Image (cartoon, rainbow, N blue to C red; front, side, top):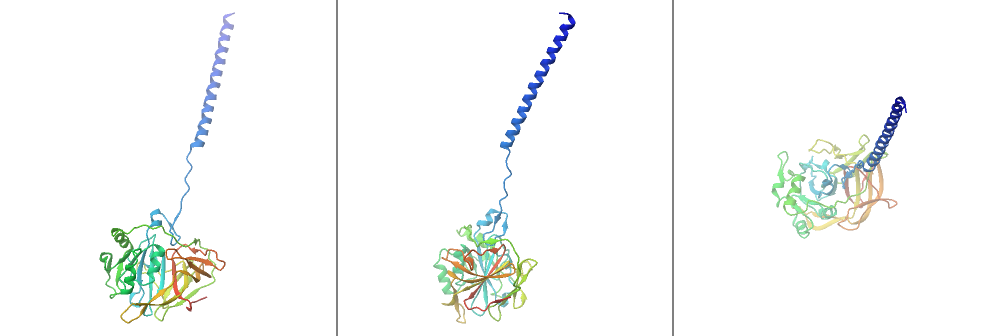
Length: 351
C-alpha cells in the first residue's frame, strides 16, 4: 500500500471512530435527559391545596385553626336604658336577645372565634343561660344572679360560671355611667381565668349551616316591639347585605368601635315563654323561662328577604337547627346573627 493510501485509510478509521463516539455520547445524554425528565415528573412535589378554615358559629373565614376549637364565652349584657350604648356586641358571633323582668331585654352575646377587649355592661345571669351554655359548651360571664338562679347554676357543674364575685380581677367599672350599669369585662380575660380555674379552653364547636351571600331584596324593615322602652327594629342595607339595628328608632351603636350594629342575619324564634317560680328582683318580679328544646316557628331574615321555617333542638347539648317549610336545612349567611327570642303570640312585623 502506498503511503498516501495508508494515511487516507487511517484518517477514515479515525473519522469513523469519532462518529461512533459522538453517537454514543449523544445517546447517553439523551437517555439521561429523558430519565431526568421522567424522574422529575414523578417526584416533583405538587403544590398543596389551600385549606380554608371557617368559624363554626358565624361561618366566616379564619386564619388560625385554634380559633375553630376555642371554647365560646357567653357574656350576659345589660340592655336597660341606662346601659346603652353597649360595648362589644358587634364583635360577637351570635347574640340572643330575650325579655327580662321590668320591661327590659337582656343580651347573651356569644364570642367564639374573635375576642372583644371590652364587653358590657355585664349583668346578672338568667334562666335562659342554663339553656344556652350547654348548647354551645360555653363559659358563662355574668355579674351574679338571684338566689334561685344561683342554686340552679351550682347544681350544674357542666356550666363554668365565671361570675364577678368569684373572679373580681376579670371585671372593672367604667366612670361614664352609674352602677350597676357600668361593669365591664374582656373575653380574653374570661378565657384565661377559666383555664386557670381548671376549665377546658377548647370545645368541639358545632354550629348552624352557612352559605354565601345571594341578595334578593324583598323586605326593608323588621319591627320587634318587646316593650315601650325596648322597641327593636332593623333596616335592610343593600350596600352591605346586612340589617342595621335600631332601638327606639335610634341607631344601636357599639361603643367599642363606634359602628352601628349590623348583623348579616336576624332570626325571630318563637318559643314557649312563661314565668318561673324564681323571684328576680326587689320588686317581686318572677324570672322568665324559655323553652329552647323541642321545635317551633322561626322567621329568618337574610339577603333582604323573610323566610318562614322551623327551629329544632332535640336535647340541651345540641345546637339548634333551622329548617325551611320543606324540612330542608335553612342556612344562614356568613357573618353575625341576632336571634330574637319572643313568645308564641308575639306581634313582630316586617315588610
